[in-house]
Length: 522
Image (cartoon, rainbow, N blue to C red; front, side, top):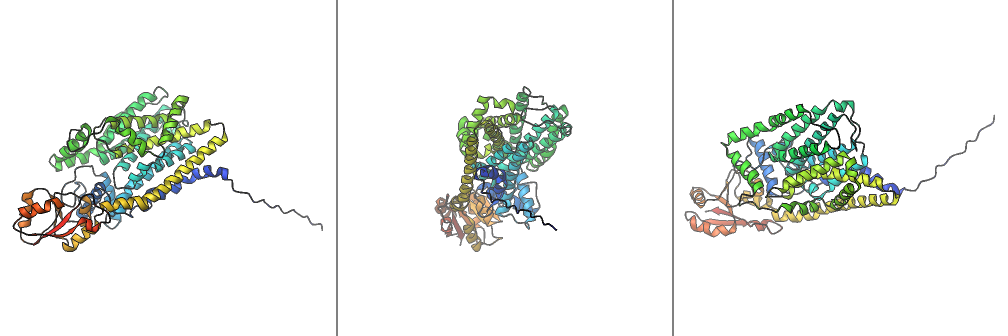
């Protein structure tokens, strides 16, 4: 019987395809960035700012008292600066954490909102079958320095940005679905999509209502003008339109979601909420009529955004200029939507007298849409493969540098900044002398971070007469005040002797921004 010899085929060992590395890295980079940028060491440092400490206090009080309507600080004062949505999220997570609000718990809703915002930016472009644009936009947003930084703090700004993005993107999708036509730069509307414009617009309204519960009516000042301007401009380029039923039901849904709490809190506080929140923290900030708030020029946000969107600001500016010079903007509805959203929000915010860098964060996802859309188009327009490879390597290098920068931020820069705001050890020393339920008096000073670490009960006040009355009462009393008031306190409160037990700087590793003194009566 003859045998058949089958030659053994040996597959030659292939050398790594380094030329393809940038493209492969770009395809998986969003997944690598998730944990590193938003959640790595999220709770490794103490609460840092007044905003973080207020969030932790409000949420902890909800869990301790069961009162989820009125926001109350540890010293018993009602906190009327913000609506409650972010604090509800922190409290809900704290309940899952055994009823304790920690640094990680306070920051997690913000970090999660940052991640969700990045994923939604990615999904928005990916749904139009634009994977490269989706990846560039998502990574651009995730590594924009101010967006990442604020996502890792217990503040409402990134959750607000997420809610605004959902609201406007759902509005955009609903109007496209109503068009029943193929729009430049997008996939054709499917029969299923054409039947769901109302669902998209209801989602938009719900998200807008949540945004109002996060920030107040200011959220509608960001969403409404964008929707109107986009509709007016886009009608020249496509068949999009807003159904009458959506226009009628949208405001009703927003009111159903947000209005009950506002009406209840204003009635519960006998109109004080209207005065504090709407007048001082909304109207006075916008008009600059309060002497307690700084006023900024109209151009303040131009350099501010240029710095805060780094490292992508130069690319955004250069590619945006190319988009208009080449006429590309006429062919891409997503680019137009992102550009209009960014520009209108920027203009609205610039009209306010009082400005903060954090207020710009709602326009960051739309700037990322612009960046991803036009970057993809620019790469596709290049005729030289070498140019495309160099651009991809530059992108990968920039992302790598940002990752290293954030490691340095978390391990070196943040701890150094934290040292100036440290209050935990000082609070522990105070409570060692005056354990609860002793009341800690905070005279002519306000430190939400110190109050958080002291725990309840604490009492904050400013009048000298009240200080004299409190210290004259029988029993030991404990008071914290700035050092410049210690001598005057001893001269005025003659019924009791005040003894210094410690200074804040003795319990910090850095020089505190404002010194404090802890005293006890004898």
